[in-house]
Image 1 (cartoon, rainbow, N blue to C red):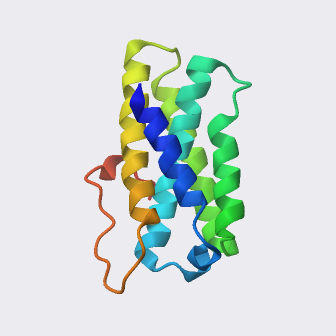
Image 2 (image 1 turned 90 degrees about the vertical axis):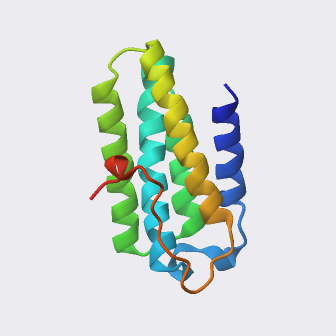
Length: 141
């Protein structure tokens, strides 16, 4: 189970970015990556609660930290919240019990989160290109 640890470290690195990387100063592709990461955090929260119980707030707390760190404008804050909630509902609905399939889904979610966090931790450049990760099915619209 190295994937959750790697993801946690990547999110920690991303959250530790200097203040010049706040959401308001991110390009549109990076802002979309933040929304995608919020969705993944929601998925992780839903799956973790299925396996650890409804009192577990580990990934929700990380989402709160993300929003506090990024200081998004109202529109982006709403997109982040909606993405998190959509990810949460999707994964809890798909995995109502902690099974090996739920744990496998968690590993996939962690890998996707790692990709997004790595992208967000990189310095941005103009014309940074697409934010596609190959997993468009899990992206909120």
